[in-house]
Length: 146
Ligand code: FES
Image (cartoon, rainbow, N blue to C red):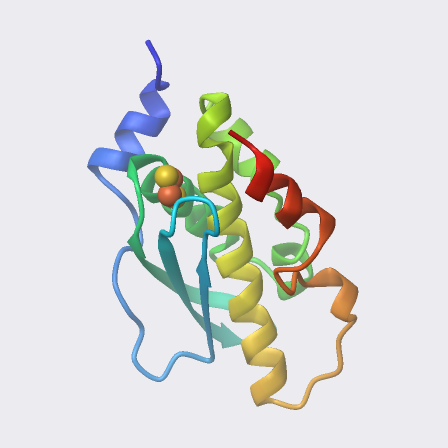
């Protein structure tokens, strides 16, 4: 089967779908390759993600990856959230087909963009290297990937 049971489960029954009013951080990213859009909302208390929701105009793999990614960061300190990789999300889903890996990148980037928004709004200093500006090597790789 092309998709693992976990992918199908998170696709059919995605966790944390929706919006958070007055979110502390909102991240919206678009995927250059497929044109899909992902938006992540974070509620942050004491440096911890107390709530997270997402909305996507993305494919099934993007939905499954975001559902899993939001489950993985819920209740976690921001420092840990920033170490989230799309690879870890894909592993937690028991894999994605190679041509769908970029969909999990969308989830990772939206989560990080939301943390960056939180930092920006609160005047918290951060290392810009930890955040993708859409212009890094990995993005160019995604652009070229088929
Ligand atoms: Fe666009 Fe999956 S094809 S996010």
